[in-house]
Image (cartoon, rainbow, N blue to C red; front, side, top):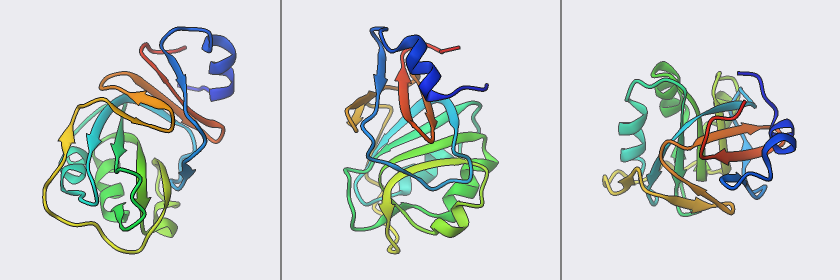
Length: 161
């Protein structure tokens, strides 16, 4: 699917279930534009559930991670990014940090996050999946559609054309 978030805004911004994210996240993946249906995860400084979800085979899905905005460790690194690619994930949006940013920039996946941090996360296996998560002024819901490019992030209840 070819799209730009600017064109989607021009065509759909008056629709009821159309949300535009506040510009909080930076692009780290090698693919600036990506879209897909949302899967959500809510964790705090623990990436066990993120790995579990990314190990699932999917088509046209984007993982949205509410990491509580923590700047104390990374929730995703090169290994998890490669697992995501191998299993068909189009992108990952993280309200938290990543690491291995130089390597991740070379990978064919969209990754948005707050910042980088060299420390890996804890492995306590705490977290929730498929809940409503909210950050950047957006309510991210399971199976809604996320569109991201260099200009921003849009979420819609329906598939946009």
